[in-house]
Image (cartoon, rainbow, N blue to C red; front, side, top):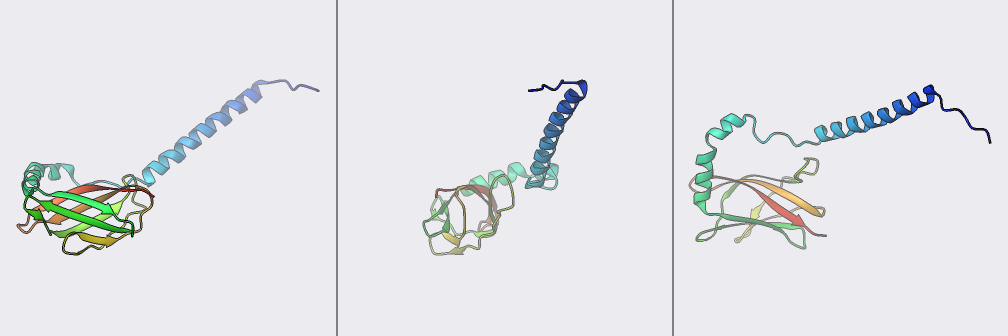
Length: 152
């Protein structure tokens, strides 16, 4: 069997090919990271920070405990418990999605069944976030990210 000689041209092609693959993979990963990023929480973080402490104090004063559970029939049950029992706030917005991208985001439509808010959703297994904004009867705004774990 005849052996070919390894020349400088061959080494240059091997090195250029390796770096082309490395740079190509890095560019693909960087594009995917930017393309799937859900975005900013607020438009201007400085303005949002001006009322953060007061808003947080008012929300904590409500004393609410919020939970979200997916039952066997695919219904998401959202419960608000106050110091004196169940609470029925006005839900201003609710977005259910993954923590890392917005491709699977859903906007559940909740109805109150006398005990908790219920909405039918179609979720795959894994961790989901319910980004919730509600308003108490006294006008206090309540914001929380509620984790929903789906086991299938």
